[in-house]
Image (cartoon, rainbow, N blue to C red):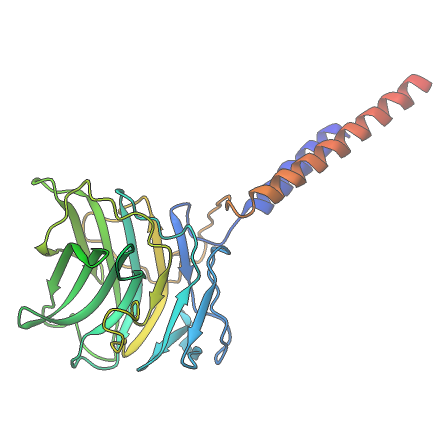
Length: 298
């Protein structure tokens, strides 16, 4: 009997601890796969609560492989409530998403923002724009209103077509040979080094960005610039530079193959797991005591 109780307990705890985030580095993962027209944007990390604005809903015109997505027009965006998902610190991190542009004209199109721009805050913004006279992608980090780092990549032919899905990944990957933070960008898995307008040292602490916004960035900083296009499979990973060389981009939603299985003990579930463990232990002790009493009576 005790053997069976032990086995059941282990199975229960493993199943209880399982999560649908693709691995333990993932702190935010949005599939955008709720029903078309829904205003519910579900993050696989239950600590992240997202709110749509300007009537934004899930786009139900997806495809059999990738499912639904989110389509942004002027004024549309979603933002998360503060959580522990977006702590950048001095370590590595990765932001990646599928993206499709509806237009490639100016002004700049904000893809993602983190934190809040202004005195006493940290922030970051990722956008496409005319950078030094040529269309490209730029990511900038701020401490208050002071620029900590500013990096860009000029688009080559075919990297910025409209109505075409791309996989976009940006990572902080350690330090380069000069001691500066090494910023890498991958478009459809092809690696590009990002050029610095303002380099930040490898010791630069980006701290806790508190939250993320998709479709624009913090409204106190260029509040009228929005993404004109779509996002899907948007993921943020803390503590890891997912790739240092070119790679084959995912061909399925995360997990990246239909048969992959990952387990993560989410910190949000840890108290419940502890209570369940104590309950199972107590039941096991009671059953053991009862079995011993019966044996004594016999």
